Length: 139
Ligand code: GDP
Image (cartoon, rainbow, N blue to C red; front, side, top):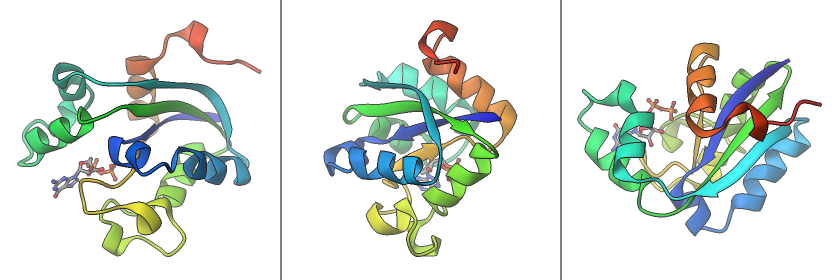
């Protein structure tokens, strides 16, 4: 049993694919243990993506992430970190496999619809960034 953080980014919310993204998680047997819609401030986006602060796209990425509301979720299941990454597809949608969320809905390398934690340490940090223990279901 594992947990990961998923975000439907502002482009995904604007494209009305919240339901489509969630459907892909549910049909793949992934449980949603927490969920909310929020609109990040620049400072909050910078904190979340602090690991990328030396990258040339950091300012553009954090502007994009504050451009509209996002949906943040805690996903739960067996090997859910890797499973979610597979359902999302490669960062660059042009390299993503057919049938992945990014292949189907991304616009460019930045506006790629979804975020998903890439390892158990990042999942722990990212889940705590958005949710406290009382907000996550324990079934
Ligand atoms: P992820 O784990 O697949 O989301 O990819 P990364 O952790 O490498 O990058 C984080 C996010 O930064 C990506 O999902 C994109 O939204 C954005 N990003 C990554 N590479 C680039 C790039 O070369 N240019 C721009 N503008 N954004 C990028």
